[in-house]
Amino acid sequence: MAQPKIKLSQMSVASTIKSTDNLMIVQDGVNKVSTISNLLKNLNSNDNIRINPAQLAVDFSVASKNDANALHLNSSTDKVGIGTSSPQSKFHVNGNAQIGSDVSDGVLVQSTETLTYTSSDQTNGSTKIVSPLRAGTLIVCNTGVNGLFSMSAGANGQLKSIILNTIDVGKTATITLVGAGFNTITLDTVGKSILLQYFSSTSKWYVVGGNGYMTSTI
Image 1 (cartoon, rainbow, N blue to C red):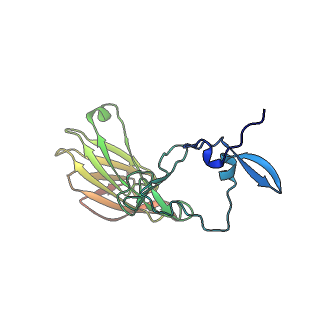
Image 2 (cartoon, rainbow, N blue to C red):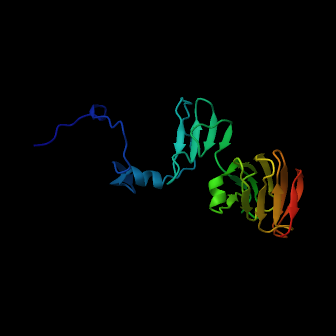
Image 3 (cartoon, rainbow, N blue to C red):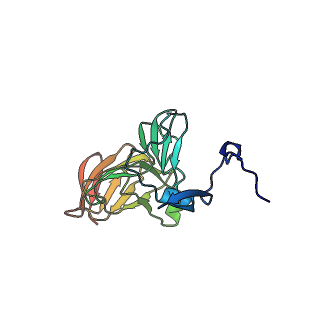
């Protein structure tokens, strides 16, 4: 028995589209079927492609394998986030951003870190690793503790500040550097700091500023 004919407007509405859903296409004059996934994978147009041209209050997100918000546009604030669903400015990168072909000649924009060295670290002879690719490091040494830290080479032209935030009188925070004209920085009073810059041509950190720091080669 032949199926009754119905209009397109009489069909059930698919409110959610899956990548495996089929649709009919006409290819070289022949009726064929393809999936939504194939359609999007092979999307190509000589026209401008616009997302949300009606400017509706709908956020737009692109996810990667490990980041649900690899790219996120907050439509209500007109702010774009990389790695964040809550961008705080017109363009907000949550993490390191790079301009340039690689880390040897790029300009890095980094966040900061706070490193806390505890009595347990001292007991175990541990060394805290200072991130060379963060713009600033705030050092905290818990009561009665000498802090041991180390830092490797940086990116070409990179500026790096290290500031001592907490330490007892008579105690020190010692940072061992890899690739420097000296190999040890000592900070012993709250507020003491050092500003370094790295040059890949010499593979060294250079002191360009600071307050009350001590350097030595041991």
